[in-house]
Amino acid sequence: MEPVRLEVKATYRLTAATLGLVSEDERLVPVMIPCNATVIVEHGNPNDNRMVDVTWGEKTVSIFVQDLSLRGEPTSASQVEEPSKPNVPTPLPKPYLLEPFKKTPRLA
Image (cartoon, rainbow, N blue to C red; front, side):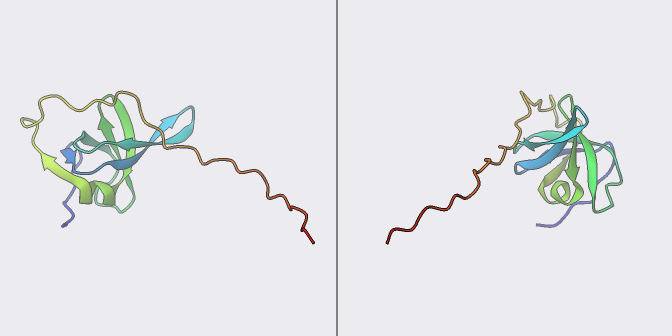
């Protein structure tokens, strides 16, 4: 799969679910942007190898430039009838908190 050249204010359709970060209460919360979602590049240097801000529905989400270049197909504004809107950002599951390891007595 060839990476595409990204442009600011360009519209892309994601061909696979993609991890993004949303800022909530001064924390970064991971969200999954679903396959076939439409995003618009807003801020950042899309030719840099870091992250870029995109608009997904009404949310601003930061995603890795590499993810967008590999999983995004450029679309024209006329091809997008209505941008995909997130229902509710789906946070990734929190890791389970494990209890500390407890030694069990050995049986003789």
